[in-house]
Image (cartoon, rainbow, N blue to C red; front, side, top):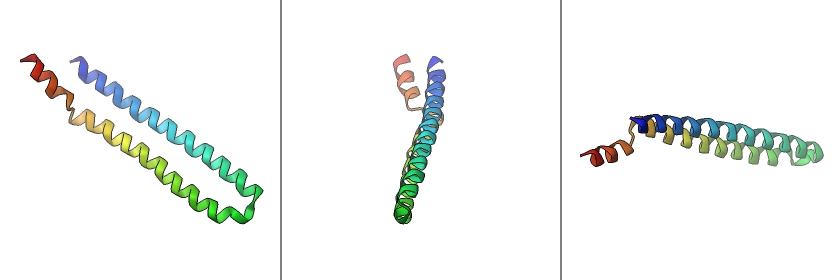
Length: 87
C-alpha cells in the first residue's frame, strides 16, 4: 500500500525536522545565555534557571512529536478508513 510508505515518510520528517528544530533552538538559546551572562554576571543564576526550564520545554515538544510519529507508524488510524472504503 502506498499509504504505509507515505506514513513512514511523514514520521521520518516529523522526527527529523523536530530534532533539527530543537537542536537549533537550544543552540541559539545557549549562545544568547552566554552572551547575556557575560554582559551581566550578577543575573547568571536567574538566567540559568530560565534557560533550563526552556530547554525542558523544547525537548518536551520534540519528544511529543516523536511519540505521535511512532504512534502513526505502529497503530495507524488511517488504515481503518482505507479498509472501509475498499469494501
